[in-house]
Length: 216
Image 1 (cartoon, rainbow, N blue to C red):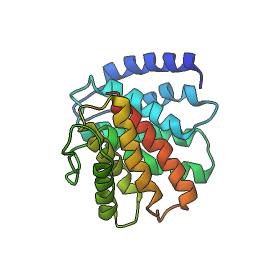
Image 2 (cartoon, rainbow, N blue to C red; image 1 turned 90 degrees about the horizontal axis):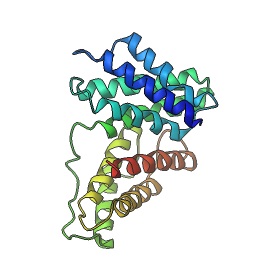
Image 3 (tube, rainbow, N blue to C red; image 1 turned 180 degrees about the horizontal axis):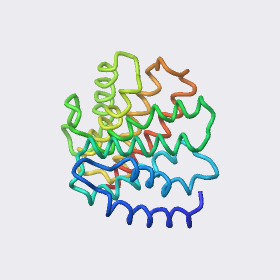
Image 4 (spheres, one colour; image 1 turned 45 degrees about the horizontal axis):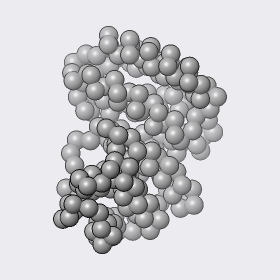
């Protein structure tokens, strides 16, 4: 990934977004312009982590656009990601899998509410027993299966749980969240892909999102 291209793309994106917000969201032409601005750093390929890079760039600029609703931000993010994925001419299998992650990423970055099943810690510092209880509660809710639609709620659950420990640093909170998420991934099955494939992909995307959330 070329850093110079990223800087140029971010500058172009900033100028574009300033002029394209409307009460109804962004037009198709303007969304296409965003795709063209953002795809330059990925001309040499598109990896799992690049989903996060593009998403964070859009999230940063959307923060200054209160006229856009959460749904409009989520929709725009998905459209931009899916268009870039398609234009990279990846294998059908990889494109198919990458597209499955875009709704989850959009919801994690622009959630409508906090998961009501969240267990709030009772002590000011993390204890193994509380982490275990939170993990078991999430596993019980999933009933041993982890579908694509569960991805955002699992990430937000783990992150929101760890963020309730005021005595922990941001790095430590991220570690707790990843510990919960990793345990859940390892102990559940997915109906879409073999666990040997899905687990690795889910962790790479999920951990990157937790790192980003912890730096907000």
